Amino acid sequence: MYDGGDHMARLVEVTDVILRDAHQSLMATRMAMEDMVPACEVLDAAGYWSLECWGGATFDSCIRFLNEDPWERLRTFKKLLPNTRTQMLLRGQNLLGYRHYEDSVVSRFVEKAALNGMDVFRVFDALNDPRNLETAIKAVKKTGKHAQGTICYTTSPVHTIGKFVEMAKKLVEMGVDSICIKDMAALLKPQPAYDLVKGIKDACGQDVLIHVHVHSTTGVTLVSLMKAIEAGADIVDTSVSSIALGPGHNPTESLIEMLEGTGFETRVDLDKVYEAKKHFAKIRPRYAEFLTDFTGVETEIFKSQIPGGMLSNMESQLKQQGQGDRMQEVLEEVPRVRADAGFPPLVTPSSQIVGTQAVFNVMMGKYKTMTGEFQDLMLGYYGKTDADKNPEVVDKAKEFAKKEEITCRPADLLNPEWEVLQADAAKLGGFNGSDEDVLTFAMFPQVAPKFFSEREKGPLNLGKDPSAFKGPVDPSHPGFLASPIDYDITVDGKTTKVTVSPA
Image 1 (cartoon, rainbow, N blue to C red):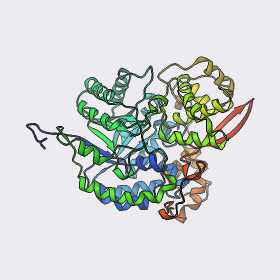
Image 2 (cartoon, rainbow, N blue to C red; image 1 turned 90 degrees about the vertical axis):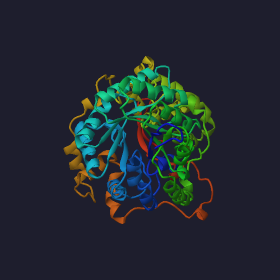
Image 3 (cartoon, rainbow, N blue to C red; image 1 turned 90 degrees about the horizontal axis):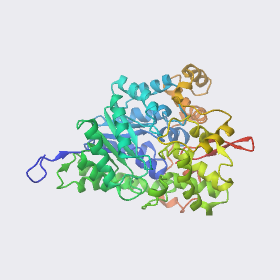
Image 4 (cartoon, one colour; image 1 turned 120 degrees about the vertical axis):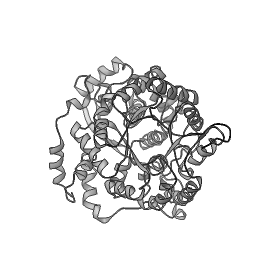
């Protein structure tokens, strides 16, 4: 492998996210399995290090909208991708849900995911609290699969290269097989990308595998990938170009062309990628009603740090309340709420929690009401933040929640729950008796009963003939709903349940 000069070219591996994060970011995870299957043969032959195909919102979308068993999806991908690692995104102690699960449930999920065909587990925590990663990483190691520890990249007065390098050291101590720098909001600028990768390599050893994941929302991150590669990054995430850019990812083809003559090369076969591109270019128009409006460049995110999908969600919330003209106020409020909460990275579920609280602050007055989730974030029930929280807001959260702040690992407060979950799942019509079904119920107890009862009808395809699409749909259309979350809203001592859609 020569670079055209006198030196050997260094191999840079590529993970393509076309089968999960690409369509999650651009079309709310609505792509039907039958629209992905025809591309699997060519993707498998393209020479990727891995193909991300599961995790994130996949589970939720499968059972909520597509009437599809997510475990069957995983098994299918494993059969269709015999030459390529399968990869998933796992929310640490939250698994694929929105709450912390007791350790045995976390271990059971990892075990079952591995048995059903998962090879690489990218494990992250929304607060970068290592305590919320330990159980899942140990479980992955026990299965013999690839455990990737994750740093959620963000910027704030307390988030420095040094702090992220310290977290990388902790991940190495946990025994991870690689480290992912996860930039979900496209905040990773070129020079910090170089400094962070170099810092981790210098501190943890040159043989530590570093995997860089960026979105394209701000328009700068293809350059960031180049700088990360120059600093020693081993693997980078991209997406087939027909499902790329906007709040999605940088195109795979662009990365490969960019590396020509630089001393770096991939083993990805461009001709195979072009075949996949043509397939997904035909598929994309069928999902027009689910496509995000944010398809350009949003450099304002450097200030607000709001991921693209979260923007449309907040806009929808405001319009439903007849206050659509107050979006700018919300955008200005988000950084203030984030600072009060100890500068958490804005990624599921912290992005939804902070964003929704900002909406309520604008509509009802500053902290006049507080979601139950925001109360828990302020009181440590999601874990420890990198910065101290605003003590006045902490006191208000205590008043609303009528409970005290905690400093222990949140999962330490949970009682064993596997047998209870088993018993509750067994009562449901359509339950098949498997641990996989129990886990599906555990993560989505409100949605699973309906899915179990209707599963035998088979998967749905929500794609439509493009000619049938009449133009933009109202933001409140179900197509814009990704993974609804129930919030407990307390006003004047009275608690009401409200459901809002996360990014």
